[in-house]
Image (cartoon, rainbow, N blue to C red; front, side):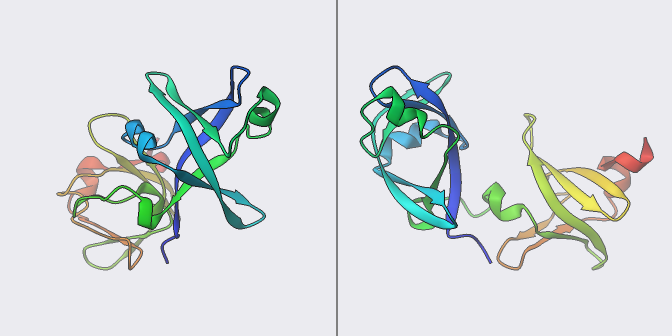
Amino acid sequence: MLSEYILIGQVLRPQGIKGLVKVRPDTDDPARYRELEQVFIQKNGQYIPAKVSDVSVRDDGVYLRLDGAETRDDAEHQREVLLYVDRAHAVQLSEDETFICDLIGCRAVDTKGNELGSVRDVLQPGGNDVYVIQTPRGQMLLPALKHVIPEVDVQKGIVVVDEKRLPEVAVCDWEK
């Protein structure tokens, strides 16, 4: 089951003395923060709406005000808070794109149906994403390329890997 909320950033620290915070954006497009009127903050298992204002996007992060914070002390209480959006306000993805949070936990199977493990993480080193698969033998790294991973179905929680490509592309920690 896909989560109703998607992580889009984390408050790092207060910025200045007027209640602003610096946010580490967990999105491909930090400029999307300019469009946000609210985010959700998780507290005690509940997602609480928080108003967003005074957004500024810079090279080193996003700066904003949450829920009308007015002082540095107000902002200090927001340090390390995780920021979410609900799916209704999430960025619209193209047909072949998937939110990373939806991939985590998916079962990885080969094209013959053999269980490989589960997706534990997705690395983004540059040219293409790399799926970190936790297998019974250890960790396997796979490039997220269509000829290696021909099918991803996050609704079913499954990632299909072409077993013929594994010998040429897989990096496994048990082979070190």
